[in-house]
Image (spheres, rainbow over the protein chains, first blue to last red):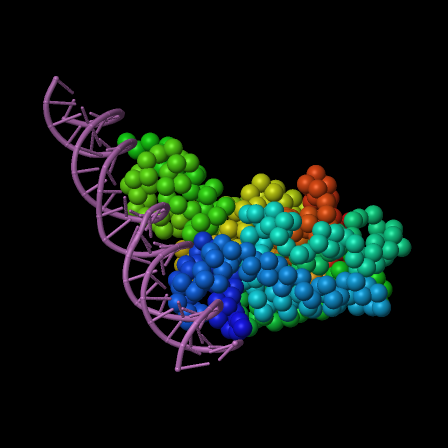
Length: 203
Length: 203
DNA sequence: ATATGAATTAATCAATTGATTTAATTATTT
DNA sequence: AAATAATTAAATCAATTGATTAATTCATAT
């Protein structure tokens, strides 16, 4: 009977370290030490560093889209409400685990095929969603001739980018952590307003 | 008399590889091979892998802000014109060298002190700029009670993020390279419009 | 209790790493 | 042309890497 507490400890340590320093930046001994296990166990459970990494990678991608999945295909909520929820939810994700987002972006840029071949995020995940259709209808109703993808990209960009570029922004504007955190919190209400303005949604 | 063509070849190879795979992902032998030189030369010129890396790192940061410096303190151009120039210029930078941006973001997130201690980008680089003052005046004129930093963050986010998240976006919306490139080109005119709408600039 | 297979450990492997040394070659100066 | 300095190459260093081995402990079922 397997009690996977050891396997889990290894995965947790690996997830933390890989997301922080990437595949090449992490030593298997480092993972073993953080997990409090003998380094041979890592290979006993996962065969190789690379196999362990791929598991962490795929789980990380899913982690990034887990909460999106619940929202974007809900037919009972308005477009406006979905915008609020997505911006709010994504800000929470990226504030709680900023390394996750950078890690995934990096890895996918270096190896775009990973997403297609291994991950469980289906292609057209977003384009076929109810959310995307709601945006399209609103754009048509207001005679705005752009792809709904622009709106989605804008939402994610405005929400995620300032957090992962925080060290840069803090320096360029010479502001402290507390102050910056306040600015980000303001964006929780500002971003939905900006997006709705782009869509000419009146409330 | 030093003719630095060798030194330059090493730096060019190092820049390309470091920006692509990060410090840990690159082997000194790899740099030497790409530069077409013996690996001992790398240490002869730069003492160590780390010293070489820091040079590349600082130059990369400067590369990211080089063209900004020319624009943001020009008193003779309008705010509207600066927005056009910055979005346009940054889109060119990030399209030409998308790895550069991801590389710098990563490295600064892992080691924020690098920016403060070693780089030549001054703190308050942006907050003290003429551009920032122009934004502030416009916000006050229109009684919009937000920090000008929001506007700057929005400009950069809308411009940069979609490019570095391209593999993700392509997959989630199931679109091809050509099509995606067209979308990005559309943003060249769209982003300034959105930003000016946020600032309530009429043209 | 004993047998069986899973879980764990310590020791060690070959390969690779950044770095150094030593010697040879090339360029510059005298 | 001789002397000196700058540049390049080949060989090799000790340390670290991911991975494997073989022996031991543990848990569970009979």
